[in-house]
Image (cartoon, rainbow, N blue to C red):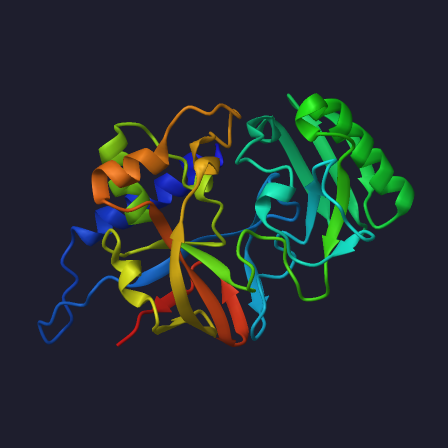
Length: 285
């Protein structure tokens, strides 16, 4: 089963429940709860997501291990392997390099091993906490990306408690599956929610309801977040994460269908806590 099928099967099941009146003994209707369908992080920017059962969120920090590593373009100037935040145009990313999605990568944070597969076959492997391991991965991407890499890519790492995500500040991203479904209605095509590379995917909301949370606080599992802004989307969402093909124009479809180019919201952790798949979200009152 693909990640797309898994997420949408869960979403359709939730929608079926929504059609059922849940009546309490006193005769009052009980509204459907908002739950976390899935949690993902992206150990290396632009590469394969990793599904998580749960995660401990810390005050003012991004999801642990999310976009902690990245591959720079050969033209990007850096001072060592640990770098401060940079704009996404300095890196290999799905915005301009859709063939990254044709690779399937796994990262073992305990051993530091990054494994890369293409068409189901291992093509590179290295301990990216060591100079030799990083060099092996860099050599693979230099050959695989060719001229698109603009020289030899460099494998870099975020500063302590930092992230190399598209957002300068340490935040987590939240995607409403009902909003993705509403966009699917406009496009007339299936949309894998992983195109939006979110951290938390939510069931039980109305489409676009999450936009009402901006500048307000929510409780997510055992943590509390302040929702800071809507997420403006770019051409990276046009890439099918399963095939690596640039087959849709979701930015255009968002603008055409809804008058904006946003999908999801960013949240800043203001109270730490454990968050697990299946946990409930309490929206602003």
